[in-house]
Length: 127
Image (cartoon, rainbow, N blue to C red; front, side):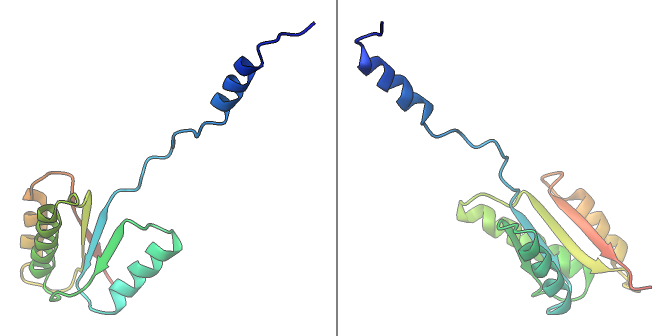
């Protein structure tokens, strides 16, 4: 008829109830540095909230000069790296394409920044 080994059945049932491992890859740790103090950071913070990207940090506490934006992004990246919580996986420097005299210098600095594939530019134009 049946088996008398009920403990064996209980052990296999407990195995099935064990917690499964996560299958989704965690979000990258992102830093977005904007040239504006209110408008641009507000747009990006709204996007971060809407898409629930909890690993993104948005800041706009730097000059509107493109090189200043890049330098501030590099500084925050290095500070995060020194704190030991792990550096940012991606750093986006957001500035517009106005008549800045050092616009190309900022792009070159981002292109040559180490480590590679971490620093990106996000350029927008109103016209």
